[in-house]
Image (cartoon, one colour):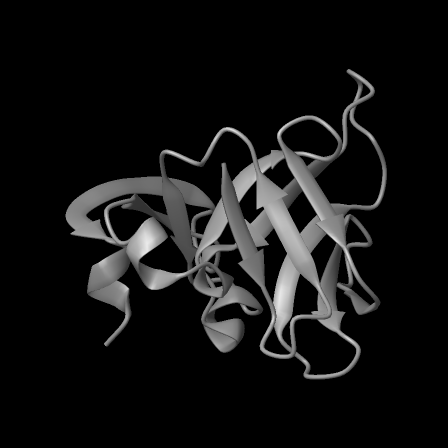
Length: 130
């Protein structure tokens, strides 16, 4: 299990099992947020709690949730369930304790130009701290 929380600890997320990979995306939102995402499904392997404000991007597919008090970007959630009835979401691994996620390998995703997975370059979450 892995847990994360915003700076003021009002918003929390939990993944069980702990994620085995993270994603760094360069889309117009993620590059501004500086997030590292772990993906899953609401109510299955990911749970969230706490009061958030939501930014819904233009395509109206995803809602990005921020702590209503400290402003930390905690997670995104699909606005609708998929064909399988499951709702996709991603949690911001930067809200976890560094030692708990340091070893997690990071995938690169080109969300800006080609919308394709670029794979891994050998870096882990710890390489993104600085």
